[in-house]
Amino acid sequence: MRRVAIVYAVLTLLALCVPWLGIYPVFMMKLLCFAMFACAYNLLLGFGRMLSFGHAAFFGSAAYVTSWLVTAHAGARPPPSWPGSRPPPRSAS
Image (tube, rainbow, N blue to C red; front, side, top):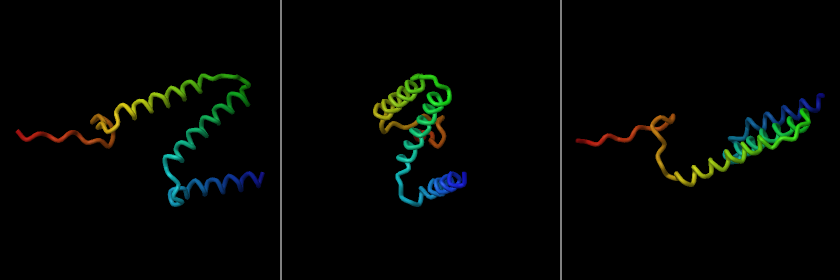
């Protein structure tokens, strides 16, 4: 039990130091998304003993739609309703 607590403490410290270690942030986000997917899969197959690929379909369809949106709308300005976006400049008339 003590060994597991030490491993969790080291992993927590490593996760907190990631910004200063120079690890690419998008890589960490992808890693955490796949870890979340693996935990859901483990919960379904291990604890629930149910074989379901429904969550994999949602995961794959979301990845497909996101990649299509990024490639189709590359360089486009976000709508003004999105947080952090500015309204277009007014024309002088």
